[in-house]
Length: 157
Image (cartoon, rainbow, N blue to C red; front, side):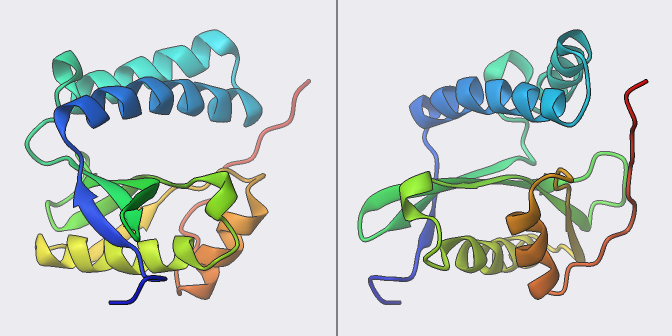
């Protein structure tokens, strides 16, 4: 491992609380940008986070990591099995590289680390959702051999 290669470090409880606060807000914003009303987005966030983080504590299957580069936190990663699938079907629920560290290959390296972490947990597949307007992320995932399995579309009337 060299100084330009990130590592995954499990978040401690204080980091998890901070991540939950910012993550929920970003999730709501992303859903609104994708076309949901604020009330729809907030209801979806509440349903998602309350089942996976009851009382703001990760359920036992949730894996939360800081992405660390040369002792500096440059992003985060949330992995867990899908609740609606077999336990060996895992999901990237969140991946974020801090804006000032983007464009350096850290997203790609983090996704490869995510694959390794999921594989170590017994995962046979790793899926993710990417919002339609996120062209950079969509291209990254395609370049890593992720294939679209569904496309949702919406038109405001």
